[in-house]
Length: 361
Image 1 (cartoon, rainbow, N blue to C red):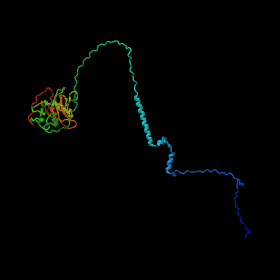
Image 2: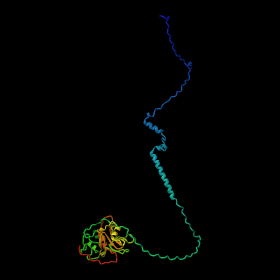
Image 3: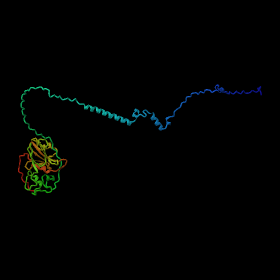
Image 4: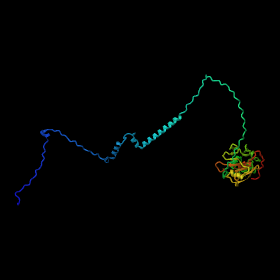
């Protein structure tokens, strides 16, 4: 070809072949000493999420503080029940200690003084007798009469309504009063003398006497005389008499049922009329419910319209006779309070002859 003198052969690179020779330690069948290199290996533990729940619970329990120690503080403070019991026990122990301390203090007593015992053979000193002047005789003090308490400040209170208990024979006496006066509760005229039993008691006569016999002689009533104020009045035998104020100003005549009839003495200004006195001492009473009244001895006074309250008025005193029940609005002894009011005498010396009862039923 043009421009080319001869063919040029391309140069081929020579390969580099490594030659491995046997280490000298192995020549001639030698047994060399073999050494290994130390290589550190890092092991990464698996995460807890791969651990089963039961194993994890056992692991946590075994690695927790106070494991297997019931009295360890960590165990105690993590258990509310044990903490409560320990706290309660400490509180009870504190109370016992404090109580014991004060009990011990209270038992302390002052030292007991020993009595000085004088020996029998001890010589006692002889005391010379002394002369004393006679004491003057005490001058007797003038006797002061006890003053009767004034109850004019006390106000009278009465029930607004009292009904009468049963009267089987309609003779004017309740069945309880028939027993009191020994009359027959089924017969209106027990002694068959043409007078009703209630009418005879009203006129202060015996309802069971064939002949006219005064009630005071029947054995059913007695005559009471007040030692301080001098009045006299009939009252049923067997009834209790009570001196309420101790000065005989307030007297109670009580039946076994607890019902009672009160006779009370009040003071009154001489210039005060009955209406003024009533308003001041018995504000619950109305003057419109009060009427004139005259007893068996022609002694005038006033009475309430239900015949359970009576007033005897004097210039400086007012005598009040009132009926009282106990826990009921039923009056078992209305004829008794009327009998007492009609037998009342301001002066116990009055012994008028009682006329026979008028004819009629």
